[in-house]
Image (cartoon, rainbow, N blue to C red; front, top):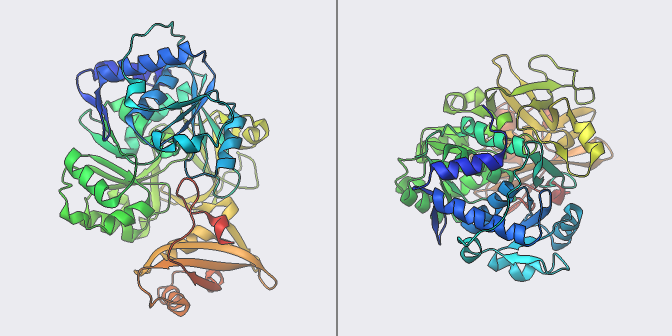
Amino acid sequence: MINLTIASLIEKSCLEKADDVFLADENQSLTGEILWKNICSVVSWLDTNGLKKGDVVAFFCASSVPQAVTFFACLVYGVVPCCLHVRETDERNRKNINFINAKYLFVDQDLFNQSHNLTEHNAIIMLSPEFVEEKETNFIRDHPDPNDLALILISSGTTGEPKCISHSQATLAATAEYGPHNYNCWLNTDSTLVVMAPSFAAWVHTVLPFIFIQGRIVFRSIFDSAIFLKTLEVEKITLAPLVPTVWRMVLAQNPENYDLSHLKTIFYSGEAGSGSLVKELQDKIGSNVMTSYLASEGGCASGVVAGSDILSVDNQSSSTGYAVKDAEIKIINPDGSFEKVLPVGEIGEIVLRSASIAQGYFSNLVLTKNKFSNGWWRSGDLGLIDENGLLYVKGRLDNRINTGGIKVHAEEVEACLLRHPGVLFAAVVGVPDDKWGQKIIAHIVANYSEIDSDEMIKFCITNELLPKSHLPKEFYFHDKLPTGPTGKLYRRGLY
């Protein structure tokens, strides 16, 4: 049964986990009782400083206990947090702060000087253990309603302008309660290591479910592969969530030299995985590998999940699995209405409905009307559902390449190129071409220098991975590929 608000869920979990450590970082750890007292202390500060339910505040920081306490206090009080991407340009962050009309900006000490480039007023508050520590509280709490705006998520903007996604108290509560389905972690003895910045939707999708199960959440403000592995070992973490790109960095650090026997779930999401990634994770880290199709607009109640029983099957390794309990999913004609459902096996737009679907896009009624209808959300992702009911994501609508009248999905080509044992990363784009309309171009990061264009073409043809119409016309080899503010591939940087 869905808790009506994320505020009530946070309070309940803190009080029930009173004597056990709930949050920890490099500098401090808080039991549930102390966490709740610290949350109340920050709520009192919000009240004393004139903030009221519905006001928006911005965060410009890494993950930490003070950040999480202040974030939770906003949710409990009814103030709306919005976390900025720390890798975004100052100009874009200034625009976002003005767009959401943020009353305060909460920042880390390391980012305090830079934060003065983001706002012209002086409402900048430095996050620290001292700021959130228990103080005498004196306020009258106005409990949020289920439909109240609770959170604004800023999308990555890797394929267009960033969008501000509005979640309610109820949709966040649903993400918290359905999250365990995505990770197979249900016990208050479970723990997770959070290294992603709070601007990532993945932060919400990981942290809120662990608040619900009353597990232990360990934060690290920076990512380092060796430190990540050591922390997994020392803290006896049971859920390790990363994107595939970062898992490949971890795998290069000889994870088999660490004691990771306590890990229950090795989780990846946010990017396409591969059969080779699954096998290497199983061989070097642990047997239970899981993935989930998750989206900022969708939340965890819309998750589509695959475990090792699916991913270990050769022709199913690229699947994201089955929808979680109570979620609805269908494939529709991208150019048609929500009712234009396509037959089994046909590629179309993925559309989702669940209790955690966002309210819409902040201050953008037109886009909200186009993307949301009767509880359904058009994802903009292309995919198909096979005869077994498994979902396969085929790429973004805006990543389709029209070459010689044939529509090619960039991610489909990338997945084939990544099957080459010498390819670490691959990105495919379409560029204007007089002959083909658009020409398929591949950008590769290889782990040895002998790989060239001829080798890649031969590999694809010999293994019958791609029809000739889908083969890249040109290959470019790089030391690294451009990424956007969330760390995802920045395709526009390849044109």
